[in-house]
Length: 601
Image (cartoon, rainbow, N blue to C red; front, side):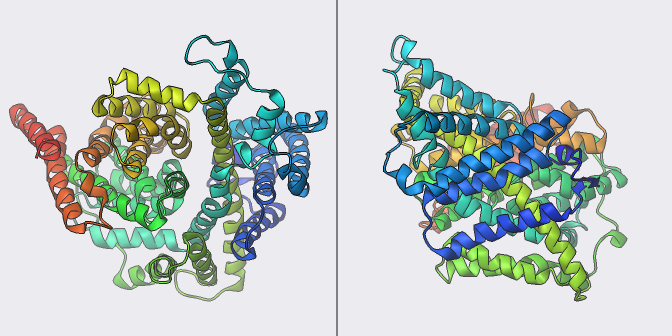
């Protein structure tokens, strides 16, 4: 995203950060006030809040991210028309609700078609072609599917009902998934932006350095800890690589670590941020909506698998230490205890407040996050030396507003486009038909169905953001997995984990590409190291299925911890077998023994 932002005439880039132009600061502030306000206003009709959410996203993607003169002037035109179209929906919410998704005049039909096209173009400019192409394929199926013979055809859809359900009713573009983006995801994105504008990032790095810097492979282990902490609030593997990697990769290279290993460590560590509670990017909140499971239960279910993932990376670093001299960080590069204590406050105070309000106060995650945001804003008055500064506050707050506005817009564009796909699946019954196909191909056996689902996640995840890949995959494969006996939350976690595969798995591995560019190495060599270190990403979702007590920490903590310890031992043996410099026969024995411990005991 930063590469597109920097080419806009309204923003210049310094180290990849757009200039804080007053217009974008104001728009960012409007975005923040609107989304925070929804938490305190009370109930707002969906056909009011969700179109406004889309309208606020349009300028960031269509104007600020414009790369060519054509994109720039067309962006202005599309933004003006798009805001007018969204405004029409919001101002006529009551009348449109009474139409029940049926268009009754040519103007509304033109408006609906324009909103669909605008959604596709906004998503294309935000993240590229793959997701809009999936949506286009779904739309084409809805329009022409009546001509497909056999079970994969459908009886046909009246255009007035089809377009209307997607664009003027509380479904399709304005469905429950978009509601999650408006009411929950946006709040946590703002929370992350406020933390990152202050000294929280330095606090993460300092705490990681103090804890792991003196160990063998210390610089790599600092990357693991800092990326886990940073990624849990950023929710983006690419952003995580770019931010923490700018510090950890040069540190590893300076200590003599192989460049491919330095890039692989950062790519793998950063990819795990999206599975790390308490925030887990946008996926956890989408999972709340799709499964009906309380957020606190999803957090508890995801905790042990996430710890196992990072523990496996940690063990992989130890295994690589048998091949390379992975020295600890020098004392001079590690922060003092005082610096660690001070900088840790910048993330500890908001995080503790967030968790206290959720678990002890009994408030909703979005309300708790709103309170934590205000605490984070107060901390923006202080720098790393705890010096109070109004000028520093203004600069940091402006940065937070711009970052929040951009990130809310991008995630909103992704989720609204994914909502279009989900709407078509629902209207045409295609999801049920694909589910039947999976059941048939797998001969109604669970493990073949799991492997088919994993392959689908890998393919769809290529260039499609994790949350969108998860939503689409679980919509078509989730019912098949639950029909074969998997509990719904376990099916969703399985799909969500495998939607991450493409971050480190060739041929498309976004996290690896960025890390390889930063370290100046061949991306395929970095990917091989990343896949070896990240072997947990391939095994742990399957281990969750074989050991379902692993995700029942909230209900059966004793057996959950027992399964976690057992799986950790198996992963350690497997990781050493894949990576460590040992005799070939011993490595094979370690891998086989590790898999037996995980899946057969």
